Amino acid sequence: MLQIDLRGHTAVITGASGMLGRVMAKVFADCGADLVLHYFHGEAAVNALAESLQSTGRRIMTVQADITNPESVQRMQAQVKAQMGVADILVHNAVIQYAWKSVLEQPLTDFDSQYQSCVMQTVHMAKAFVPDIIAQNQGGRIVVINTECAALAEANCAAYTSAKRGLDGLVRCLAKELGSHQITVNQVAPGWTITEQDRMQHTEQQPDYERSVPLGRRGTDMEIAQMCAFLASPLASFTTGAYIPVSGGRVMPAI
Image (cartoon, rainbow, N blue to C red; front, side, top):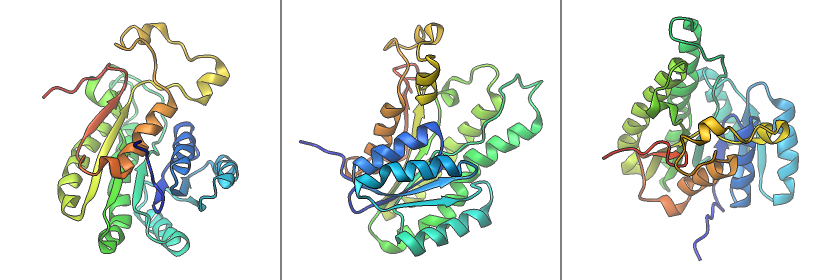
């Protein structure tokens, strides 16, 4: 029986205090990974998450950093290495939230914030963490959260879409640059995902959106997390440079 086995690996999950980040942390811990839970403002949430994961027996570390600031990310890397050793799985999940508007109405600062938190997060994380992964000479995994919006380019999400499309180009370049070191770099592109917030507010069903999904429903945070865990595992050792929609068929990349 095939199993996702992350024992012996350490994963850094950025934005671990967020709705999706918390579920990814639980899934990775269940698969056996030691965890570094990153947060920016969500200290209380990430500490509660770390406490809830103690029963898994995994080593758990929480760390604060601004993923748009290279010095802050370098400090995070030094803290992680000192406490946990080399982290060989990087999951780039953090993003700055903002109000979606039309291009004509969107403040220019939102375009910059999305570029910084999507594209430059991956640049800063790669520069900080990848040299030690290479030096360890045992391969590694980078899993980046993209979005179905990057493929669909729908109205009123230009700042987010343009940043995520830029991220796609960066990931493909990284995959080619790091492949000789057996470091895979892949993207998971969720659709409009059901999170704990939806469950608390009873907003899971969105009929207009669901009619546009071939599978006829919204995906769940668990389904996104499971794809991330798969890509982080030895089962995905020959997959790199991929943009993988987890959107129920709403996005189907063409050859």
